[in-house]
Structures are given as C-alpha cells and as structure tokens.
Amino acid sequence: MQEERQETADLQETIASIDLGSNSFHMIVVRAQEGNLQIIDKLREMVRLGEGLTEDKHLDPVVAERALACLERFGQRLRTLPRSNVRAVGTNTMRQLAYSDDFLGRAERALGHEIEVIAGREEARLIYLGVAHGLAAGDERRLVVDIGGGSTELIIGVGFSPELRESLHMGCVSISQGYFKQGQITAKAMKQAELACEVELQPFSSQFREGGWKRAVGSSGTIKAIREVVIQEGWSEAGITLSSLERLSRALVDAGSIDRLELKGLTEERKPVFPGGVAVLLAVFRSVGIEQMQVSDEALREGLIYDMIGRSQHEDVRDRTIKHLSNRYNIDEAQAQRVDRTAQALFNQCLKSWNLADPEFSSMLSWAAQIHEIGLAVSHSGFHKHGAYLIENSDLSGFSHQEQRLLAALVRGHRRRFPGAVFEALASDLVNSAKQLCVLLRLAVLLHRGRSATLKPTCLLEAQDNRLNLEFPEGWLEGHPLTQTELEQEAENLRQAGFELSFR
Image (cartoon, rainbow, N blue to C red; front, side, top):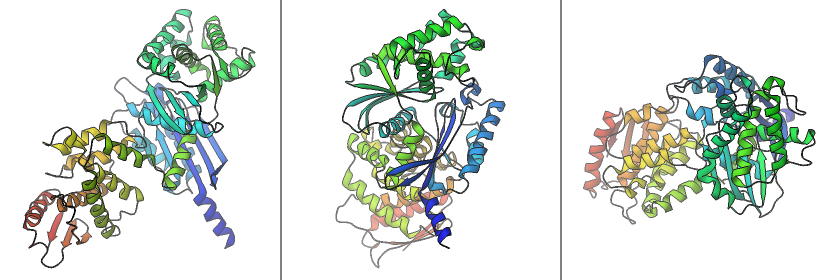
C-alpha cells in the first residue's frame, strides 16, 4: 500500500513537455520537487516536419507518417501521466498547416495528449523562459537567439522577463531547402542565403543591435551543433565567435556539397540542414552586432516546464495578458468584475451537470468576462465582433492558437444572435463545452445590462443537457421588468442555438 501511495505521489510530481519543431521533435520528462527539477527522461527525433510542407500548406504523407510514428513512441512514454502534467506545442510548420489538413487531430491521437499550436512570439517567450532558468541569476540584459527548422526567435530580456521578442520566417530547414538544393554549397548560394536572412532581419536589426544587452546566448540544436564544430575544429575556445563562424562558412563552401562535408563534431543527421543554419546565424551575428555567443542547453521544452510550474503555483502569464488587454483598451473594470463574479457563480452551479470540471474552463470563462467589452475600443456597433477579431489576431502571451480561438468565440457569442458556426469551427471535443460556457457568459452579461454597482442579482441555475432553468427570489423579476423582457428575448436566441431556457 505504501509503495502504491509513493507511486501515485511520484506520478503527480512528474511532468513532461513536448516541442514539435519543424526540424526535430523533443520531449523532456522531469520530476519537480520544491522548485528543483530532476530530468528523468529525454527523447529527440529528427523528424524534419518542415520539409514536408507543400505549397498548398498540407503535409506530405510520407513526412506525416514519419511524424506520427515518432509521436506514438512519445505517447507510450507518457501513457501513465495525467493530462494536466503534459504540455505539447507545435511551432512554425504546424502554424502554417491549412485548417483543412487533418494532421493535428491525427497527431493528438498518436500522442494521447492535446497539442497546442503557439504563435511565434509566444514561442519566443517560452524559449527565453527556458534559457533564463539555465543562466546564473542577475539583472544584466541578455539577447537570446534560437534557430529552429522554420523560424528564428530573437529575445532581449532581464532575469526571467522578456522585454523585446520577435519571430522571423527563416530557419535551418527552410533556408537549406531554398538555397542549397540537392545539397550543393556554392559561394553564390551561401551569399544569397545570408542576404535573404539579413533582409528578414532588417526591420528589427536596429532594435536588437541597440537593445542594451550585455551577453548573447544561443539555444537550439542548430546553434549547439555549430558550437561543437567550431570548438572541435579549433576555431573557437569557448562558445561561438564571429571569426569562427565566418571560417565555418568558408569551410562549407570549400567542401562544395553536403556529401563532402567532413567537419569534426558534425553528425550525419544534422548535415542536410547545417548550411542553412550557418547562414541564418551568420546573418544574425552581422545584423545585430554579435561578436561572441554563449550556448545554452535549455530551450523551448524547458520553458514549457517552467511555465507549467508557474501555472500550478497561480503565476499564470495569461492572467497578466488579460490584465494588459484590459488596461490597453480601457475596459470598464468594475463592470467586467461584476460579470465575472456572476458568470463564475453560474458556472459553479452547473459544474457537475455539464461536466465542466476541467480547470481551464473556469479560467476561460473568467478571462472572457474580463474582456468581453474589448471591442468597444473600435465601435459600439457590433462590438462583440470587433472584440473577437482583436482577440483572435493579437499576440497574447501564454495563449495557444486554440485557446485564442476559444476566447474569441466566447466574446463573439456573448450577445445578440448565438453564432453556432463559430463554435462548430472549434476542435470537435470542445464544441459542446464551449457553447455551454458561452451560454453562462451571455446570462451573466444580461443580468448586468444596467451596469449598476448596487444591483447584485442572485439566482439558482439548474442545467441538464441543453435545458436551463433560472429561479430568482420571489418578486425579483416583477421588480425588474426590463430584465424579464430581455430573458424572454434570450430564451428565443438560445432556442435557435439548441438550448431551452426557462425562468421564474
């Protein structure tokens, strides 16, 4: 019995993160104890998802099957972990996939866990978080560079806080495919590749060059591979210097092709995308003014781990993001709090009958309530539509693409006609719960239509399947005829959405 209790405790403190990049898939499993992390397993496979992206933004079947086989292997390792202890994120290639491509759903089934598709700037935040935890504590400004298969992230931050972050459309896979076709490495191709990267960097280079950073740190497999080569070849004593990087570039051109590359420390699996990675890093060095770069072993996957720990300790960056939006768009905070309190009260009453036990549901409802009037910053006419647009198309730190779409759907549906099609476009296993959350938000907004600080409506809500019954204190509705009329209109709106609302 004691062994079983210990096994359960170990399971609860074991967490895992999966980084589904355009070049490699990475998984890390750690045991978290009193703020310390003990790595108990690491898996990495060179999947090269990015090379399978077709012009019409679908995934080549051969590459898709290769990725799914890897995810099934990862999934076997994660089988005993609860959903809340695992986070998997997809980056550049998965961001570009056409919505009609079914790879994401197949990938989630293979892994056995939900996969979040994150924006480039969110990827940059998580990378910085991982790298920062691996560095000595201090208040110096740092520049962090991460080269992935399809994107490159640049971040300037202090301590654990990123202050400037960008994600650029260039990576070791995409640049290698675009400029070193059939594995040929010529001086002209290398120059063209570097120039293409410098063009991509140009709108941001002055910001990062003049960002006041004292130390440059690189992460990712590409940068670690470059470090290994320049050190083992004797071109650098520590880290990566500009002169060693330039010498490496010349060595690639001298070799003439990937097949003839003979560099100490360079693995066979890294060779096909190595020239593109060198071109990207050389362009970053020159554009941003880097002379020497330290290399970190931590990256996105470690950032995910620390972000998960933060959420479990009620330090969720998404709370700060919502607060920032509220301030930025001058939302009526008092009204938002009133709606939030009532929405949560209604939520708690139908938590069991609607099976809304997932803690993310309560958070999503609360966040939607706090910013449901964000669209008023654009126009009162159709402000629920303006709000949904702002939410879905903004860079929201901490939120995945799927979470932003859910949040946008709740705000879009909080008034007027219920937009069923918007909810049907969400992930199939989320549609019903998302509609239920929206109904609760609609009712909370309706009950506070008068925006009164003194009006505190209390009601009992019973929910069973798609039937809802609201019961108010005796005589309350008679004393609030406007609310009664609006409830009658709302009953009709919900009836068209498949819900039956009664009240007394």
